[in-house]
Image (cartoon, rainbow, N blue to C red; front, side, top):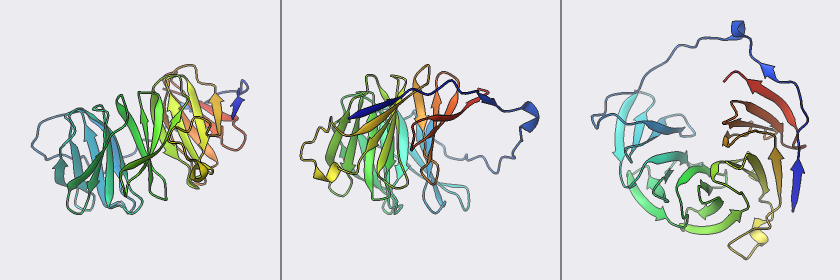
Length: 254
């Protein structure tokens, strides 16, 4: 069940150079003694007390944002950590890796809870819904939904033609956005998932948003769920109206 939106050629919005504002850095987090490694992803828990960072050296690092002190290093992945997400309650951290797995961590004990297996290629993105469902996007072209209480896979959403780069839940939990190297964004309607009995949910209703010229790499919802910003290899950010699927603005400058 697909509706394809082909955005009109709307005028692009470009920030004027004299509108740029320089913001002062509050703090630079340093101090751990495990060597230097690229930072691939950061995530903050709901109350803003803890920051997690995922690294090329296969580790996850935790920081106390009240004191800016390094807390601990979580180890277990066998390849680079690419994405992180805190559960809504803040007691679980999900981490995605190039090793094809997602790990769940207990933030009270700082121990691994379990490893979620099922993807056949690198996992590049994870996101929690407000109800605690975990979504993961992979270079195997699929999105998987997980029950973090049992560690069981709920469904696989298939349909992207190339690698899935990012996933994000709407604030209302009814929509899941996914972006792909196939240059599209899909908005999956999850309202009927509880009625499905098959694990591979290829007929999940979705809208396909088309307009980027190259791979779409990142996505987010506005707090009210009405606007969807997407970032692409085509050097643009597009703002989409979630209800109509139309492009509101194209932001240039990158």
